[in-house]
Length: 150
Image (tube, rainbow, N blue to C red; front, side, top):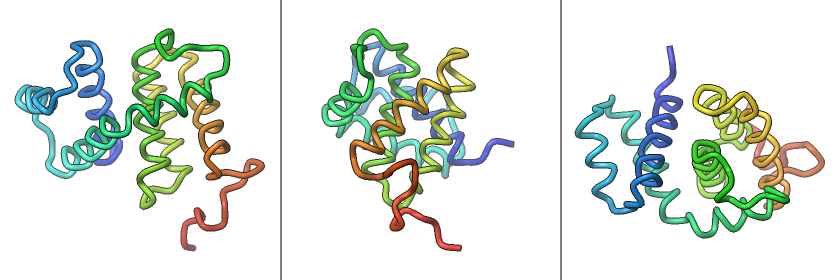
């Protein structure tokens, strides 16, 4: 069974995909989605947090992703991969309550389910670059402040 947070990430991906395809970033987009696809309250609440944060910080997130995807333009990426990267980058930078490794692992799993065969490795590589560039990860190790309590 898929956990509530994984389900929320999948719902956030679907809502953001709808917004990307329709070109409608208004708050009505998620409301329309929820009207057609009801979900458990815990999953919906976390999804709403991810959606709102990703939309609010999209410019900053896209700037970081452009640096991390060397030799690629964001417009050339698969929309699914791009949205997964945006969601995970939002988590990495703006959700200190979520451990870095959890954000990356969850993005890889969602990419495995919704992306292409190449998505998981691509997502992992890009998010690793984002984490390094933002001082979240040094030389392949989690910073001491990012380690979960034993």
